[in-house]
Length: 180
Image (cartoon, rainbow, N blue to C red; front, top):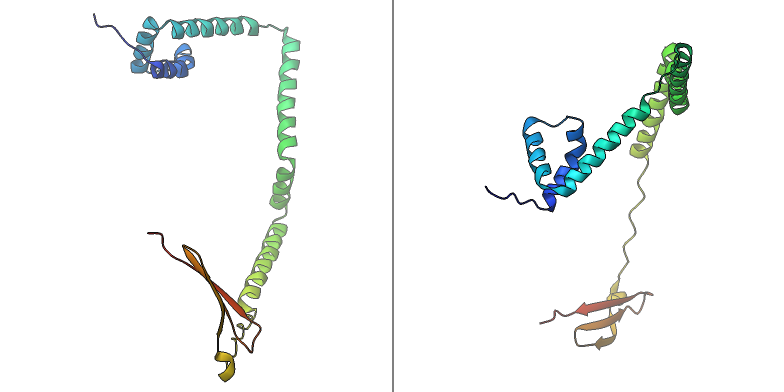
């Protein structure tokens, strides 16, 4: 007979499906694989036993019987709490929805106002004049002369400082050489 060897991933898969196995929700093939694994794995078998014990304890603890009138009162209170939770959770959207259903003119009027606002914003974007482009620097005869003020260099880069005599502008170029 061949010995079955299971690794941790088999146990992880089995433990993930253990609830479905206990509840009888696994298909035939997965159920057979689970049973084969449980026969050879003490850890997973112990977890199965723990789940079955817990399930039995819950069934015994939930078996509560109330007299007819108290049972009716209990279920009425449950229904009331459910309805209160729904109303508290969605109270505003339900009221707005009902308002628009009962007053269709209000719905169409609101849609018209919203459409007009969107149209105004779109028209503003389309019809707004664009700003003029920035004026280019006027370079004429004497100001076209560029003066190199300094050149400093290191092992991998150079810095060049340029300026024009007629305009208050200085240009700094940083030139980097590729490393070989």
